Image (cartoon, rainbow, N blue to C red; front, side):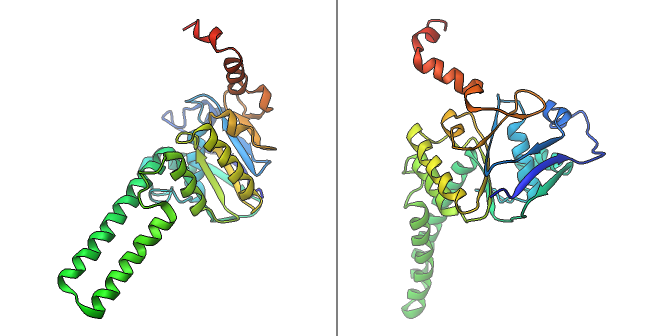
Amino acid sequence: MIHLRAVNIKPGAKFNANFPFNLPLVQKCKEIKFRAPVTFFVGENGSGKSTLLEAIAAGVGSVVVGGADAQRDETLRHAQRLAVQLQFIWQKRTHRGFFLRAEDFFNFARRVNAMSSELAEMATEFEQYLTGYGLARAKGLVLGQRRELARKYGEDADARSHGESFLNLFRERFVPGGLYLLDEPEAPLSPQRQLALLSMLKEMVAEDAQFIIATHSPILMAFPNAALLNFDKYPVRQVAYDKLEHVALTKAFLNNPETFLRRL
């Protein structure tokens, strides 16, 4: 399902000379169209792909995993300024979904562990001033919440591998029919876990989800029928998988690593 069809620079939009308005992407690209349920933003660091993804999150009011919603997140002030100058064209407006950066995942894992510890402490404190039915009821409530956290995210989110925790979080927070914005989700994932993520994307697309993903991963870029938008040249255009520099360079290195390593 394609919920968000396009993002345009508003007619008459006014930019200053500061970031993010000084990015070539903002100055030279007036429209980005989404023609597939899964779209990848591809390009070097500094190309503007993550900035645009953040601005989309702020503009559509995405929930930031591990933080406030994108319209109030202090770390997204630059994206919020850009979002004001953008126009969002919908096929079907959805308020479901979330925005996830790698750093948000690590923050979320720490928050889950902190919440679990606090709930355990509350249960212990109740024993100091409650007895009988009141104690049993109070402890039951907080320990029930703690068990639910453990069911969703594991007894200790940090004890799991980062990849396992990331995929578990992604699965638990998913709801059908949402718009999901992911910034470099491959960061905590091994190649095997990236393949697992591709499998999850396939299942979620079948449930009317749309994904817009900024990535450097040739594995993720290989998702069948995905739209690959190249941010290294302007205007941004869709390119074939085999024409991407990320893919060609990775293939060349894996086929003959010694040639590359001799040049170091």
